[in-house]
Length: 224
Image (cartoon, rainbow, N blue to C red; front, side, top):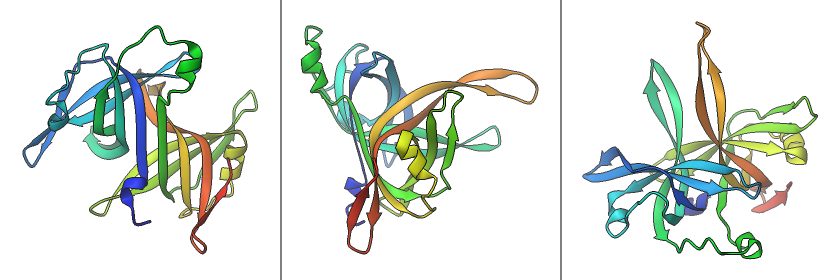
């Protein structure tokens, strides 16, 4: 894959739910993080962290409640915490546009608006874990390595359902795949050896379709 910008492309539409906080600085360019609330069709919402350069905020006020369209990439980095490496996931914004917050849109109009879509092309870097829930729902966990510029990679956890999950049982490590899905957040309870626990938030891509890339003829096999 030569066009790295097409390996990882994401669009989110949602409302700002937090003030921006300082994240880091690279070569004099400051970056900030804020949360975006993105609705699902089920009426639930995902709260997604957005990392944005100060240069995109010159003429944009991140007021809580403001509706934004964010275009960028779903990225990961390692954070060393409590003597352990932790995989941190965030949306890296490449463009942000304020959009009119029209609460009077009818349901049919809303259906035509893409509010959460991510397209990833990368390599399966761990054997997918297939399992079934107590209600016989099939699920597979996939870790995808997505190449980025300057010899970097993002490691993106993905979750597949149904026949996509079943198919993942046979995918070998190193297989190149293309995934279309949405970024989702979910809460889970982390239990510690001393018996205590805390509520944490995980971020992942919920897979809607998956293709295996055939390198020999540069085609794809659609499996979802």
